[in-house]
Length: 185
Image (tube, rainbow, N blue to C red; front, side):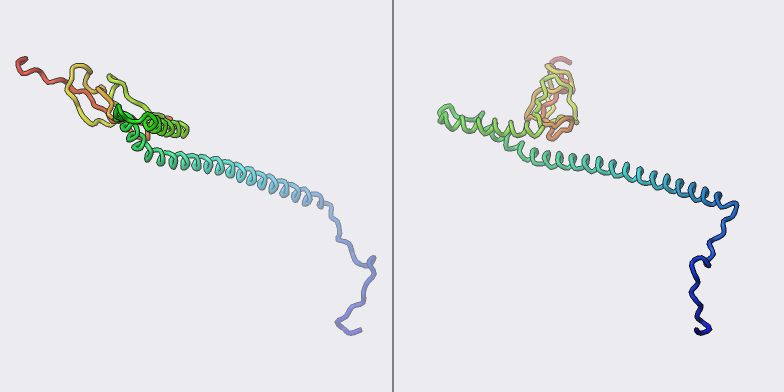
């Protein structure tokens, strides 16, 4: 054998690490370090899981809002068609064929049913109801003593809402204070 080579030694000749009297303390320290690290990782996992649940909830809510908004946009485009069909039904001549009148009325009813199925409801302010700019659009102010100032006199066009959200404001005539007659002054 050369100077760099050593003879293999039997397994009994290899020294085992010597155990010291304080060797239990490092094992306890390791154990507490491992438990602390485990607890930290567990807390991180729980926070991550809670964040993910909150993220899913937020995304689901946003998805619902987007769907409602898209549905609302389509419905808003249908309202003028419903108005036109309503005017057509009201303007039908007396001599119009009954089947034609029934057909137009049926189309109007089906469109209204579709709008209601999508969660939109028509609303028509009653005369005397207080004007609310969040729900009503004033198209004319009429001097009258029949209604108090600021009250709805009549409805020009119905409005639509979905829950609390106004999709289209109702067009209304609003009362204003009546002007005194020419000889009353």
